[in-house]
Figure 1 (cartoon, rainbow, N blue to C red):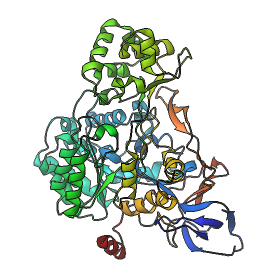
Figure 2 (figure 1 turned 180 degrees about the vertical axis):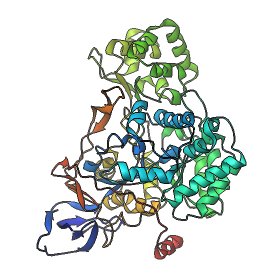
Figure 3 (figure 1 turned 135 degrees about the vertical axis):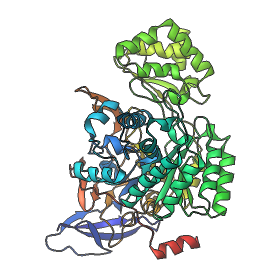
Figure 4 (figure 1 turned 90 degrees about the vertical axis):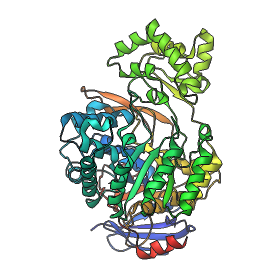
Amino acid sequence: MSSMLIKNGTIVDGTGAPRRAGDVRIEGDRIVEVGAGLSPRPGEELFDAAGCYVTPGFIESHTHYDATMWWQPDLDPLPGNGATTVILGNCGFTAAPLSKEKAAQLEMIKIFSFFEDIPLKPFLQNVPWDWEKWSEYKASMARNITLPANYSAFVGHIALRLAAMGIEAWERAATPAEIARMAELLEDALAAGALGLSDNLHDHDGDDRAIPTLLADDAEFEALFAVMERYPGTTYQCIIDTFMRKTGPESLVRLGRLTRGRGIRMQIAGAVPTLEFQKDILPALEKTLGELRADGADIWPGYAHVSPTSTLSLIKSLIFAQSNDYVWHEVVLAETHEEKARLLADPDWRARARESWDTKAWPHSPMNNPQDLYLLDSENGAGPVGGTLKAFADSRGLHRSDAMAQWILENGTRSTVHMAPFPKDEDLTVQLMNDPRSVGNISDAGAHLQMLCGGGENILLFTKYVKEEMISLEQAIHIKTGKLADFFGLHDTGEIKAGRRADLVVFDLDEIRYRDMEKRFDVPDGDGGTTWRFTRQAAPMRLTLVNGVKTFADGQYTGNRPGQYLAPTEAPADQRAFEAAE
């Protein structure tokens, strides 16, 4: 059994308690001793953490590595940014369960590919799809893949619907028999250790079809919630629409009604939206949230500390469709770059595209804010590069849609146009950070590969919010360690305490940086080559340990993959009593 003593560091233990000088002893995969002045033992590896903080490993609370981990199992760049646990299966998008019907199986894969901006062919070529039930999927992960981080996963309502109903899940409410089948499949997943049920009351697809879960009636929800009641350590995670059609307020009222008195812990992404264009629905959402909490609901708003950005790519992007612009989405769907270029130059298509931007696209969408769209990424360097789409349109005397089409034609169809981050209410973001019942560190890591989602975003908590004294270091660590571990029911990680998993990070706050994005051509395209994704270099950490094994050390990824599946458990009795008292 390997052993290590991390010596001379400053411990921030993940509970929110003040930092303190101390040492941490590890044996095998567990922390066995925490204290000051611990003496090295014979044969024990000594790691000198002088000048550094020693903290629990960071939990990536909202990722979509369910697919990409099969062809990118190093989870780059997470180890170098201190991540030791990733939460999979969010927003209803999960790889299991699977229908027995091949058409429905493909439909589920296509849903995941579209909504998370992940190429379809690698899904089909790299993922084994040797399961039907979620329990079989979990066994396949253990059998076929190793990761540098621990992982835990939801089962998705979308997948349940397609497995029980086939492609008719897109078309109608479920029958009682189909609802019973969904409940049976959910029971299988929760019994096998799924985190809980994830859901989606938000999306429409590239053909403007409402996501299947938007067709679920109350009877369907009630049956699924009845199953969840029997598994008190689990969570219901749902994204509501505060971004497109803004139906979030109605959805929150409905979920509150359907879960009333059931004791189900809920994480609702969008329950307290922080972007400026969402202010019109914020009062109604805050009012409902307050009423639900006063009525005893265990409801936690999910939030991101990083404002969403949009990269307008013609290769793989949902941003046009989700902006209600299905004309430019035609270019994304075109299979070859020659066909994409033909469309961009076609006068009839250009006329339809102008009309779409003028009358269909949401007012807050990138299409209607050309002053915030930057021409940063040219395939051939023709340029101009660095200015805004508005400036380019004005210089050519063109409509903003024609201007973007022309710039892409001149610079190459692999070029991208980048939107500045949406303006965000930072005071409200900090208020959410300080809420004892909120889920932070949401990033979408593993998805939207050409929009730079996720990897490295957790570092911004330090480089912005801590360094600008908006929150304390202790609070930043708590937000992405102990608070999340307790929320998800992962009670043997998230804190520096004897008996907990040796999921630890050592870093010098003065060394870590929020790195610039870079293009990396390492995503298989399904045709024998690679396409690109945006990523970041490591922060870096001095040391990242997962289950006592180094995943990042000496400035680089070690190649070790000691991650294990973590199943949720109900909080210990003393912790439940403390939470009830709060």
